[in-house]
Length: 44
Image 1 (cartoon, rainbow, N blue to C red):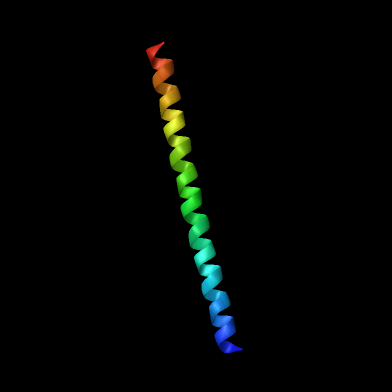
Image 2 (cartoon, rainbow, N blue to C red):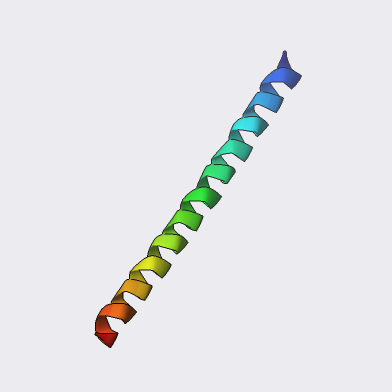
């Protein structure tokens, strides 16, 4: 039982870390798209 709970907790932690990396990746893409849009607008 204890080992099963530990593995479950570690699985949840890895899932949280994956979600964080996914969010940071989305933020990076959003920032890149925003900066490119601003560059296009300034070139106009």
